[in-house]
Image 1 (tube, rainbow, N blue to C red):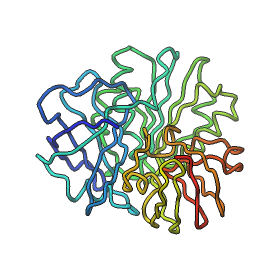
Image 2: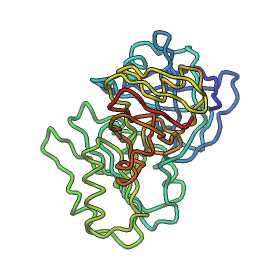
Image 3: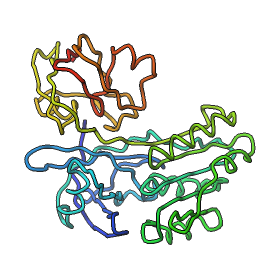
Length: 317
């Protein structure tokens, strides 16, 4: 995938766990345009091993002098969020992909309900800029665990005004999804990004209330889970690769010098899908793209987040 050579222009500690990063293009020119909900993949060399993590673009899509992302320091990080927090400094060169949008606004929708949990607020920052520019009808519902962890609340108050509704868990405030989604006009779209438990509840609630599937939108990038080591054989490339416990299949394939397609690296887009030709064990599917029947068939795998529970996997690559 084509990469942009960028420079870290600013680093800001937003909350105890969230840092905000500003990137500018190395040659000083404008960055490529994007739309609300877009993300980029940041490439990091950590101890000689390349990590590539997706992060939502947060600035106004109309301002491409710089890109803005925020990163939450994860307790069980494989290294990416810790690297961003502890090693990325102003002036450092960094490589990022061109923007991709897998969480776009349905701009013909009559109304938009935005629901964020914690760091899930990030994709909505650029979406709100788009909605304000369009003069669209929307509500922003933002849940976080305590006041000090409410990233960008003051900025949201200015951009959303009375459309912003905050729910602080430490103060006993809970978002009633059924009440919120059960009283919306026809033509309303709902968008959710946050912890998997929140996303699951929102999706189930909307579906149980009879919302059309095309009106329900979510973004939930997954981190590749740690698992047992196993080997993969690439039929077309005619090589065998060991996948370590703490490395994804996609990362192992790339480290072996084989080019593999991707967009999100988080089990959402389906771009990295590979055909499974043979396996001597089960496949541990962790993506949000394949259907249940496709997962049961064991004929396809998303190497960005899924693994094998066996010794050998033969792939059509």
